[in-house]
Length: 189
Length: 189
DNA sequence: TATTTATAACTAACCGGATAGTTAGTTATT
DNA sequence: AATAACTAACTATCCGGTTAGTTATAAATA
Image (cartoon, rainbow over all chains, first blue to last red; front, side, top):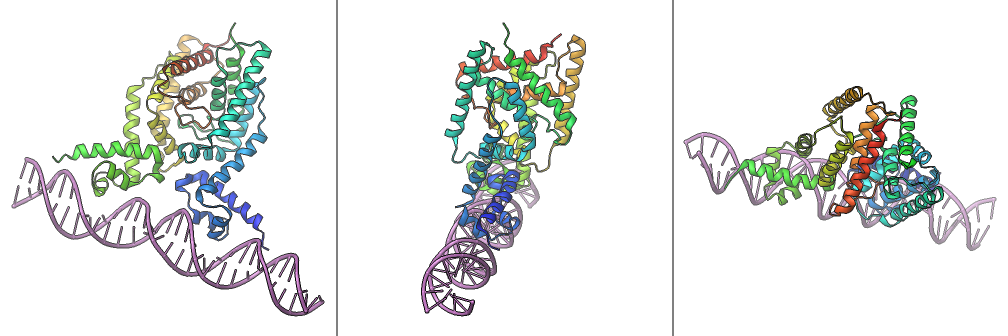
């Protein structure tokens, strides 16, 4: 039963766990191989080296994110809620992104910045349509939304991490976030 | 010119830089020794091992923080502004905290949680005095404040890091944060 | 259909440099 | 003379990456 595609997937799966818990520097290729039940050399055949393996894992999950969360500039509170739900469901991806931020080898700046720019322009357009004037720039709003929505998912050194099983607390926090973003997008004329 | 105290300080200084840029796993003791212009063994004499050196560095800077930023429950927007200024002035300490959060060896949970609890109670008291009823719980407010205030200091994977020399953008963002917290603490009766 | 052949999938063992931590000894200071 | 401050050299282990070779699989050939 030899299946290259399956072993590749198994490697990516366990690499995800390893990198998410230990980061790039802390991750151990031997440990990944052992847990994925494959020979270490396969990792180097399928993915050039530790670094590339990491970026592959990150890239894979990031593209998934963009498919799962659609951006709705006309409903920013709702968007915040979606991001919050996603963040609480996938703290490991958040950690991956944080490791990548701290260990900034080969920045994948360009695409991320482009995606952000696009969102900012969409907010600007939506603001023009609704003739809403908030005190806040689209740049600030977007950062505030993303930051607040992901604050309770375990990567924030200040915010207490929420238990992802505590449905009650979870929905309380979600509505609080929605409320906060509502306040910030309502405009004060 | 032999001065143990001075070399200890030199070690802590360079260790700060090393840990802040590479984290615990990525930091290299040899590199610290070289940069601190001291023999590697001294590091092990003065600070047990790499781990202890890290926690010593972190602890040192954290106590400094608590001295520099006073908590003002009756003026939360002002507190947010102070935190923002501090965060933009000390991104390296932020990074240190983030590394510590991700590489959660020997959590220093207790004291941090206690300090947070104290602040939360102070907010509750202040709210009672002013008879202000915001939609938000003190827990949520505190996390929101800390998160927003530190979002632009370079550890947030979503928010664009601000250039700490761009005074104009800096003060713009500061007032935006203050405005946001004002909205959240004003109450809607 | 049976047999060879090519190659894809996989493995065990190894390598060398890096790295945390140690030892045994030297130099300065009081 | 005693001890505090410091050093050079060493060690054992870890770890990313490689090599050289084996096994399964499927196509080609007879």
